[in-house]
Image (cartoon, rainbow, N blue to C red; front, top):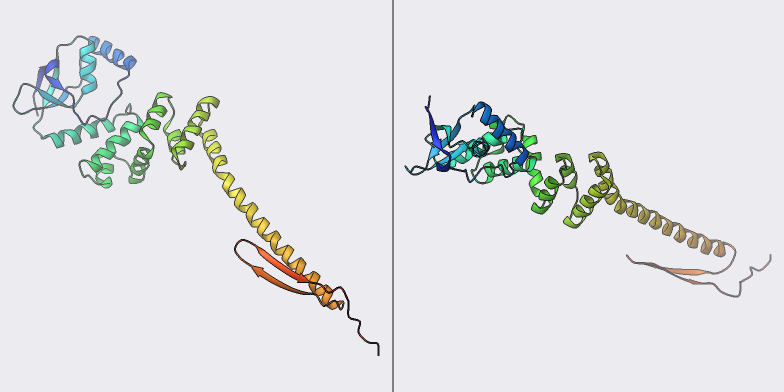
Length: 264
């Protein structure tokens, strides 16, 4: 078991692959007060950088920030021997498993493990105790534009709100929906219903087009029946029909003099 050593806070450097980007001031003040009263209960995990006096934090940056706020000059640490890549992977995995990581931070961290460190979804899912489908759903959140993600977090919208926005095909419509959510205070179900109405319009137009096309066929049959009725009545009407993708054209000739059949 590695020994616990106390390291000056100014000698500890943050991990560049730390997935957590937001440290809420209220929570940090609460942590600082807890550290003042109880101390740091769980040592930070660190690695030595190039045999220097400086160490990189593998896990525990939040505790370090709380200690600094509490005025603590040295914090308990456990030093491990690992390279920068292993340090990054441990840092990401440790943070993703914490409940207070935002859903976008979690998705970004999982994406790093797969794209930067060449881990498979199956490997990440095993480490995190999640299903591959749950992992895929998290990664899909990264398809939203960065400014959209920032707005969602700033406005305190939920992960389900973000998932609903994935149905939208272009960024202009995404912002339209986001503005509506804010103006009307839409919950998730209301948001999903609103998005459904936006994309229901083209379907109705398609059905209407089919109905009009069906009416054209009725008109054509009506003209054909009219010509046949005239022919059956002894009127020598003739027609010439031309049909293209754009129109149906009829040329009908009706003689003004009706030929009378001779009586027997």
